[in-house]
Amino acid sequence: VVAVVRGRSEIGPRPLGRRSILAVPTRSAWAALRRAAGYEWYQAPMASIAAERASALFDHPVWSPYMSFAVPLRPEAVAAFPGVAHVDNTSHIHTVTNGADSWLWLLLWEAARCVGQPLLLHAPLQAPTRWSAEPQVLNTASAVIERLRNATGLDHALVEDHLFTREMVTRVPEGLEVEVLQGLAHSSRRVRHRRGL
Image 1 (cartoon, rainbow, N blue to C red):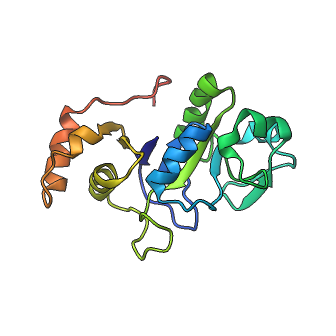
Image 2: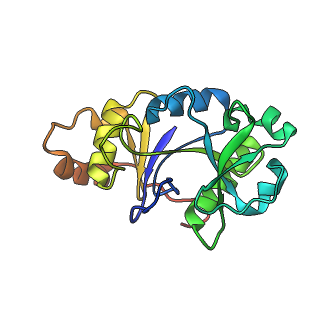
Image 3: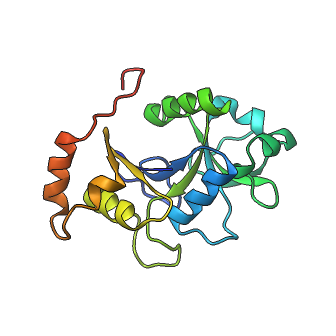
Protein backbone atom coordinates (compact mmCIF):
# COMPACT_ATOMS: atom_id res chain seq x y z
CA VAL A 1 0.00 0.00 0.00
CA VAL A 2 1.74 3.14 -1.27
CA ALA A 3 0.74 6.81 -1.26
CA VAL A 4 1.54 8.50 -4.57
CA VAL A 5 2.11 12.23 -5.10
CA ARG A 6 3.11 13.18 -8.65
CA GLY A 7 2.93 16.38 -10.66
CA ARG A 8 -0.05 18.69 -10.48
CA SER A 9 -3.07 17.77 -8.42
CA GLU A 10 -6.22 16.67 -10.20
CA ILE A 11 -9.44 18.65 -9.98
CA GLY A 12 -12.57 16.57 -9.60
CA PRO A 13 -14.40 14.13 -7.34
CA ARG A 14 -12.07 11.13 -7.82
CA PRO A 15 -8.32 10.48 -7.52
CA LEU A 16 -6.67 9.68 -10.84
CA GLY A 17 -3.17 8.68 -9.82
CA ARG A 18 -1.53 11.97 -8.86
CA ARG A 19 -2.79 12.19 -5.26
CA SER A 20 -3.69 8.58 -4.60
CA ILE A 21 -3.13 5.52 -2.46
CA LEU A 22 -2.48 2.41 -4.57
CA ALA A 23 -2.41 -1.29 -3.67
CA VAL A 24 -2.47 -4.71 -5.29
CA PRO A 25 -6.03 -6.05 -5.80
CA THR A 26 -6.20 -8.55 -2.93
CA ARG A 27 -8.63 -8.69 -0.04
CA SER A 28 -5.88 -8.11 2.54
CA ALA A 29 -4.48 -5.14 0.60
CA TRP A 30 -8.00 -3.69 0.35
CA ALA A 31 -8.32 -3.94 4.14
CA ALA A 32 -4.99 -2.12 4.61
CA LEU A 33 -5.87 0.51 2.00
CA ARG A 34 -9.26 1.06 3.64
CA ARG A 35 -7.52 1.76 6.96
CA ALA A 36 -4.97 4.06 5.31
CA ALA A 37 -7.68 6.03 3.48
CA GLY A 38 -10.07 6.17 6.45
CA TYR A 39 -12.82 4.36 4.53
CA GLU A 40 -16.00 3.25 6.25
CA TRP A 41 -16.92 -0.44 5.99
CA TYR A 42 -19.66 0.25 3.44
CA GLN A 43 -17.57 2.30 1.00
CA ALA A 44 -16.97 0.61 -2.34
CA PRO A 45 -13.52 -0.22 -3.69
CA MET A 46 -12.11 1.83 -6.54
CA ALA A 47 -9.66 0.45 -9.07
CA SER A 48 -7.48 1.55 -11.95
CA ILE A 49 -7.00 -0.70 -14.96
CA ALA A 50 -5.25 -0.39 -18.31
CA ALA A 51 -8.09 0.54 -20.67
CA GLU A 52 -7.30 -2.18 -23.19
CA ARG A 53 -7.91 -4.91 -20.57
CA ALA A 54 -11.10 -3.54 -18.99
CA SER A 55 -13.38 -5.77 -21.05
CA ALA A 56 -11.63 -8.86 -19.64
CA LEU A 57 -12.82 -8.02 -16.13
CA PHE A 58 -16.09 -6.12 -16.54
CA ASP A 59 -19.44 -7.19 -17.95
CA HIS A 60 -20.01 -4.08 -20.06
CA PRO A 61 -17.81 -2.05 -22.39
CA VAL A 62 -16.07 0.42 -20.10
CA TRP A 63 -14.63 3.85 -20.81
CA SER A 64 -14.22 5.65 -17.50
CA PRO A 65 -11.15 7.93 -17.55
CA TYR A 66 -12.51 9.97 -14.61
CA MET A 67 -13.67 7.04 -12.44
CA SER A 68 -17.28 8.02 -13.05
CA PHE A 69 -19.04 4.64 -12.97
CA ALA A 70 -19.54 1.60 -10.77
CA VAL A 71 -19.38 -1.31 -13.20
CA PRO A 72 -20.36 -4.99 -12.67
CA LEU A 73 -17.40 -7.37 -12.57
CA ARG A 74 -17.41 -10.66 -14.42
CA PRO A 75 -17.80 -13.65 -12.04
CA GLU A 76 -14.30 -14.88 -12.84
CA ALA A 77 -12.90 -11.41 -12.03
CA VAL A 78 -14.67 -11.42 -8.64
CA ALA A 79 -13.08 -14.80 -7.90
CA ALA A 80 -9.61 -13.72 -9.05
CA PHE A 81 -9.62 -10.21 -7.50
CA PRO A 82 -11.96 -10.19 -4.49
CA GLY A 83 -10.39 -6.99 -3.17
CA VAL A 84 -11.81 -5.06 -6.13
CA ALA A 85 -15.42 -6.21 -5.69
CA HIS A 86 -18.03 -4.40 -3.58
CA VAL A 87 -20.84 -6.42 -1.94
CA ASP A 88 -22.86 -6.12 -5.17
CA ASN A 89 -19.86 -7.27 -7.27
CA THR A 90 -19.30 -3.84 -8.80
CA SER A 91 -16.26 -1.59 -8.70
CA HIS A 92 -15.70 2.10 -9.35
CA ILE A 93 -13.34 1.87 -12.29
CA HIS A 94 -10.68 4.19 -13.70
CA THR A 95 -9.60 3.20 -17.20
CA VAL A 96 -6.06 4.37 -17.98
CA THR A 97 -4.48 4.81 -21.41
CA ASN A 98 -0.85 5.31 -22.29
CA GLY A 99 -1.75 8.67 -23.82
CA ALA A 100 -3.63 9.94 -20.76
CA ASP A 101 -1.11 8.91 -18.07
CA SER A 102 1.88 6.94 -19.31
CA TRP A 103 3.39 6.60 -15.82
CA LEU A 104 0.30 5.01 -14.29
CA TRP A 105 -0.36 2.92 -17.40
CA LEU A 106 3.16 1.45 -17.24
CA LEU A 107 2.80 0.87 -13.49
CA LEU A 108 -0.42 -1.06 -14.14
CA TRP A 109 1.38 -3.27 -16.64
CA GLU A 110 4.15 -3.86 -14.11
CA ALA A 111 1.45 -4.90 -11.62
CA ALA A 112 0.14 -7.34 -14.22
CA ARG A 113 3.41 -9.25 -13.93
CA CYS A 114 2.56 -9.92 -10.26
CA VAL A 115 -1.23 -10.26 -10.24
CA GLY A 116 -2.08 -11.32 -13.80
CA GLN A 117 -3.94 -8.18 -14.91
CA PRO A 118 -2.96 -4.47 -15.20
CA LEU A 119 -5.10 -3.62 -12.17
CA LEU A 120 -4.55 -1.75 -8.89
CA LEU A 121 -6.80 -0.74 -6.01
CA HIS A 122 -7.10 3.01 -5.73
CA ALA A 123 -8.12 5.49 -3.01
CA PRO A 124 -7.82 9.27 -2.57
CA LEU A 125 -4.91 10.68 -0.62
CA GLN A 126 -6.92 13.08 1.51
CA ALA A 127 -8.42 13.56 4.92
CA PRO A 128 -8.82 10.54 7.22
CA THR A 129 -12.60 10.46 6.69
CA ARG A 130 -14.65 11.42 3.68
CA TRP A 131 -16.77 13.77 5.79
CA SER A 132 -13.79 15.81 7.00
CA ALA A 133 -13.46 19.41 5.85
CA GLU A 134 -9.77 18.76 5.13
CA PRO A 135 -9.16 18.90 1.35
CA GLN A 136 -7.35 16.46 -0.86
CA VAL A 137 -3.60 16.59 -0.25
CA LEU A 138 -2.03 19.23 -2.48
CA ASN A 139 1.36 19.81 -0.88
CA THR A 140 4.03 17.11 -1.19
CA ALA A 141 5.47 17.81 2.26
CA SER A 142 2.10 17.45 3.98
CA ALA A 143 1.35 14.37 1.90
CA VAL A 144 4.48 12.52 2.93
CA ILE A 145 4.74 13.63 6.53
CA GLU A 146 1.10 13.51 7.57
CA ARG A 147 0.06 10.34 5.78
CA LEU A 148 3.12 8.29 6.71
CA ARG A 149 3.26 9.66 10.23
CA ASN A 150 -0.42 9.06 11.02
CA ALA A 151 -2.04 6.62 8.59
CA THR A 152 -2.56 3.04 9.72
CA GLY A 153 -1.89 0.58 6.91
CA LEU A 154 0.42 2.90 4.98
CA ASP A 155 4.17 2.33 5.07
CA HIS A 156 5.53 3.99 1.91
CA ALA A 157 5.01 7.12 -0.15
CA LEU A 158 6.24 7.86 -3.65
CA VAL A 159 6.77 11.60 -4.20
CA GLU A 160 7.68 12.26 -7.82
CA ASP A 161 10.53 9.75 -8.14
CA HIS A 162 11.54 9.50 -4.47
CA LEU A 163 10.43 6.64 -2.24
CA PHE A 164 9.92 7.44 1.45
CA THR A 165 9.29 5.04 4.32
CA ARG A 166 7.47 5.53 7.61
CA GLU A 167 10.80 5.20 9.44
CA MET A 168 12.25 8.15 7.50
CA VAL A 169 9.44 10.57 8.29
CA THR A 170 8.80 9.70 11.92
CA ARG A 171 12.13 11.37 12.68
CA VAL A 172 11.01 14.69 11.14
CA PRO A 173 10.27 17.40 13.76
CA GLU A 174 6.91 19.12 13.34
CA GLY A 175 7.24 22.45 11.56
CA LEU A 176 10.37 21.43 9.65
CA GLU A 177 8.69 19.17 7.09
CA VAL A 178 9.66 21.06 3.93
CA GLU A 179 13.30 21.60 4.90
CA VAL A 180 13.81 18.05 6.11
CA LEU A 181 11.96 16.57 3.16
CA GLN A 182 14.34 18.29 0.77
CA GLY A 183 17.24 16.71 2.62
CA LEU A 184 15.56 13.31 2.72
CA ALA A 185 14.92 13.48 -1.00
CA HIS A 186 18.64 13.77 -1.68
CA SER A 187 19.46 10.79 0.53
CA SER A 188 16.47 8.61 -0.37
CA ARG A 189 16.57 5.86 -2.94
CA ARG A 190 15.77 7.34 -6.34
CA VAL A 191 12.98 5.41 -7.97
CA ARG A 192 13.07 4.98 -11.70
CA HIS A 193 10.70 2.86 -13.70
CA ARG A 194 12.39 -0.10 -15.35
CA ARG A 195 11.19 1.09 -18.72
CA GLY A 196 13.02 4.37 -18.49
CA LEU A 197 10.55 6.79 -16.88
